[in-house]
Image (tube, rainbow, N blue to C red):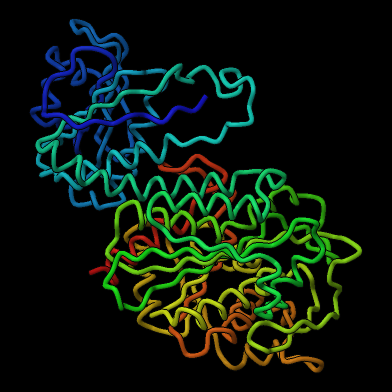
Length: 498
C-alpha cells in the first residue's frame, strides 16, 4: 500500500536509530552535522571503495553500520553547489524518497559542506520527498505483493535536521499546498473513466469549497440556454451528461481583474464516430489532463492563500460512439455564434474549449486566459514528451510562461500561430472547420481556439505529451504526472500576486 510520509523539521542532532540520510557535495565532502552521523568514518571508507564523488543523485548505502545504533546510513550526492537551484532541491528530495524502502523512522540531515542551505531549500527538499512518494494503487487488492518487497507497512516518519526548523516548516506549508494540488491532478488523471465521469469530476471539483473556493456547476440544461452547441455536440453521444465547472478563488484585491485558466475535461475519448484505433485507447481516460491541472492549480492557490483572484473553468464531457453521436459533416453553433463544421469527431477537445473560453472571457473579462489540453498527437511529434507546446497571442504572457517553465522544469516551447495557418481552418460550409489537414495539426488546433478569445491575452498549452505516460523522473513515478500545476503556480507566484 502507498503511504505518504509525515515530515517534521528539527534542529541538527545526530540520529540514533532507524535510517539516517546525509547529503554530500562535490568530492564527497560532508558538512559538520552530516559528519556527526558517521563517527566511525564508515562513509569515508565506503566513498573510497565505491569511488563516490558526490555527483548529483549518486548513492552510497551502508547497512547496519559498525559501531552505530542505526539500521542504515545513506549518503546522497548533491553535486556542485552552483547547480543547486529550486528544481535541484526538489530532485534531491525525490532521490531521498527513493531510498526509504521499508524504513519507517528516517532522519535526513540537510547539511552540505560549503553550502548555505536556506529554509526554502529545506522546504523544497521536503516537497520533493512528498511528490516522489505518490502512488496510485487504490484498486489493488493485494498491495504488498503488487508493490514489491520494499513496500512499507506504515507511513514513514521523516525528521529533517536543519539550521532553522521553524522557518523551514513555514516554507514547507506553502509548498505542501502545491504538492497536494499536483497529487490531486495525478489522482484525477489516473482514475478509470468508469469511476470518473463528468458528474463525478464536477463533484471532486466542488470539494475545493472546503478551501474557500467558490464552485458553480452548470448542467446540460443551463449550457443549452447559453448556446454552447460546440461543447454539447461532443457530449451528445454519451449517456453521461456534461458539466461545466466554474471555480473562483478571490485572494486578491476586491476589484482586481482575475487571471483565468481553462481545462479540457474529456473524461474518456473514444474518438466518437471517427473512432480511434483499439490499441492504446485505454489511455484516453487521461484526456482530461488539462482539467485535472486546472483543478489541482485552484487547490494549490487556495490552500496556500495566494494573493490573487483566479478563475478555473473545466468543460467535462465524454466523447462516445452512439446513435445520437455527432457525425462528420455536422455543423454546430458555438456560444460565440460562430459556426463549426465538424469534419472529424476525434478533434473534439477544441470544441469543448471553444465554448469554455468564450464563456470565461464573456463573463469574467480576465487579465489573461490560459487553456490546457491534451489536444493533439502532432505536438508529440514536434516536441516529444519533455516540453508542452505553447501558443499565444501575447508576447509578455508567453515569456512569463516560458520563464516559469524553466524554473519549475515543467517546460514549454513556443510554437507559431499566424494568418497562413488560420486560412487552413476556413470552411466552405461554415465559419470554420475543426481540422486543418495533415500538416501543422497542433498549430491549426491553436488557430481554432484563437478565434474564441477576442483580444484578451491568451495562451494555449498542448500537454498531450506531458500530462500522462511520461518517463518516470526523480519527483514523479506515476502515469498521470500532474503537469501544469507547478508551472502555473510558478507563473502566478512570479508575476501576478499582490
